[in-house]
Amino acid sequence: MDSRGGRDEGGEPVGESLPELLRAWRRRANPRRIPGLVSTGRRGDGLTQRDVARLTGVSERWYRELERGNEAQYSSDFLDRISSVLGLSPAERRALYLRAVGRPPALAVVLEADRAAEVDEFLLQRFLDGQIPNPAFATDLAWNVIGYNGPLVDWFPWVTYRANQMRWALLDPEAREQLVNWEQDWARPFLGQIRYERAHHPENEALRQLERDILVESPAAREMWERREMAEHSHGDFRRLRLPYHQGREVAIRIVALRPMRSDHLRVVVLMEVDEGGVGS
Image (cartoon, rainbow, N blue to C red; front, side, top):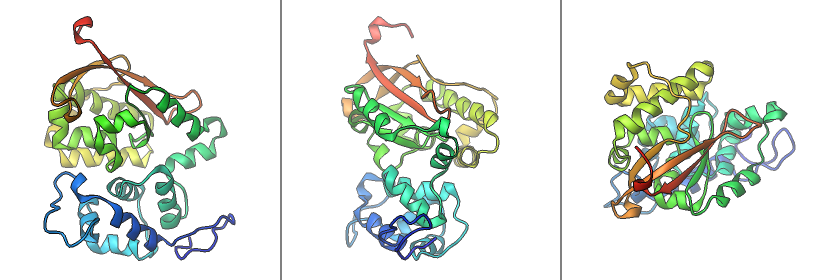
């Protein structure tokens, strides 16, 4: 790994160093869009090193070592948390991984190691954009959001800065208000999906960390986890939302969940607004 710039082992230009990138990404982050972060009385825009450390659950010293470009055993979960807090795009997340640990994110490794699993990101984004006006997004195996269209941002602004579907739905207090009948219709099925994927991918570190984080941080999730429920996916499910975008009005949706034929590590989800009076609950 070369955090100072130059070229990587494959001869590709590295560009800015890791410290330069992290400082730039911190400065552009909007603290007002991060729930629970005090933004009043600040001397400037952006996040501080202390902010990022607290939001990612590590010590300020540990984060500072990363921002200095020092090599260490940075976990995928830690780097994904950094990506979410700083609102990194998929390309920026990949750059973070390459500079911090010398390899691309786990999803990219899987796709590159297995040519049969290759997914064209451009085509995936075109598909998501083609679902407009319905919100649509794609996640990797651990529910990190790797692509989304404009309507999804309108409905769920958090996706631009904290892009893990399960962490938002199960840990963020606002999710309990916005996901109608949160425990029965959302939390229990989501936990069942996590248990299902953990059973099918027991060695996947990102899934293991996701399970650990949710059970550590949420007593309610721990209690529901003891039910030992499993769920494969939410395709076809009827659900209701109460979002600020709709001025608090309840909206009924059908969830369309798909997997690209070339990869079982990706999910594509489309939220189709429906007339609640025309469907059964």
